[in-house]
Image 1 (cartoon, helix red, strand yellow):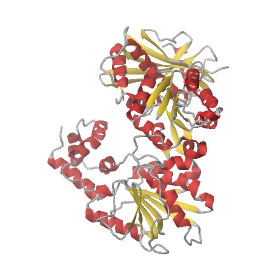
Image 2 (cartoon, rainbow over the protein chains, first blue to last red; image 1 turned 30 degrees about the vertical axis):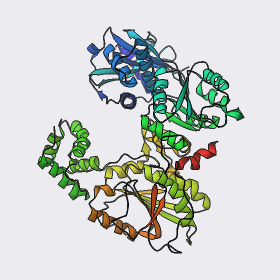
Image 3 (tube, each protein chain N blue to C red; image 1 turned 90 degrees about the vertical axis):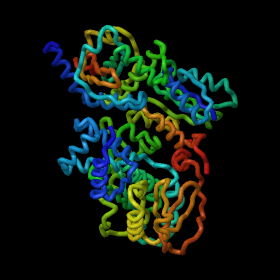
Image 4 (cartoon, rainbow over the protein chains, first blue to last red; image 1 turned 90 degrees about the horizontal axis):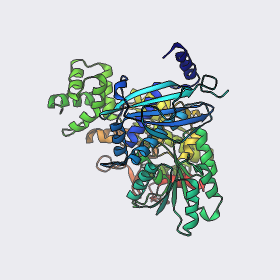
Length: 170
Length: 129
Length: 299
């Protein structure tokens, strides 16, 4: 990350009181309620997330703009859907729906920590390397890397920078 | 007892339907507020006892659905419970002011959903001594 | 990996000495599962390693952590509902009908854990007692200093406030602070919190009209139960009420309490009630307490 984007990230983060611990707490609650699984913070291991990842994001608009992103290895996304639905086998549609709802729940709880008033969009789920809402106009301001069962989930919050560089509306 | 589960997420509809069936409900589903209103219009006297309502849905959101249901005297007997990620204090105030009877924040364990049914007196499996 | 008998007995002796709790043989699984999170946090890996390390170096902090882990109950708001129905429909009406120049009640939440019971009582008193022009002092005690602090803070996670608490009460009596919800100051100020070990002599103080002692006696042997219940009766006003947990009874422990069955729940009244013992005038419906108190208003 360049020095300039570091500064932008700091500025964006300074305007919202969001910590990595918040992301851990929120994801812990979602995972324990719907997957009956504990999550635990891990050192980031980018090698775990490669071309075959599932990326689910939900946008936030209003006083603050950006999105919340969940990234899981394909096997992890499948495991999450199976757990959530209590099924031995799941279809691609069921995986998309399960990940969408998990992201909706994480995103909704992140939103409640942002400046009022914000609105949650509808979740988007893709498989690949590029997040649905990524672009050069967003910057990652907060992240958590978590292990659960035999897999991982990466949770991150991205702010829009084509506003006043803080993700806040001018 | 009949329930109508309203959520644009298929998995959430599935899970709530399972929870309700386990305690003895017949369950209908709708994926947004408009479809839910249309369904209420068509069931005549066979109204659900309970609606669980997501907030953020396309076409018609949950708050609007609650407002529209509460405008109809013939639908006054339906209990309305929000089940949503919206968790700001003011959102709860708005929903209850619009006429929702209960509010369950996501995520929640299955037991919490049943406890809300107990609060509403709408848990058919709770035996009466 | 199962806890060896001598490590298990070390834990039993520890909690007996520190908290008067009796753990019988057969409770090894309980000890293992409750101590496992502590073992993981300390890096010990297994409960056996953790207990062995504590035995080699019995720090104050380590001993407290073990007692906390073995005594912490999950508490919910308005737990079991029927006792709270009995509180507002039977106990309070009877108490306010008695002569009481100061028009003040004292209520004790013994073994208050993280405080949901005490604050549930406080919210109900705000709705049912204060409007009558009466006031209330609520005392909440627990053996664990951690739980005393938690109760004083009156702060709960989103999951915790979703357990048994009507939404109308959540918006009325709580505000959000960050990811948490905190009980409003006017409710918190009704509750005084202090540490207390029930197996030790109770500190001197004014008597209580109502004592909640729910789901804590199960930790003690019969002799200790008897001693505790006798002490509770000594600090209860004549005709005052004692609330026990759903599966608990005074039978076989202390038969001086008058037992008042109310559907699934039994209310216990201390002897000496003004006017003498008499059958209940009110029959309490067994359906959920809370709709009659809050839900009906919303319709």
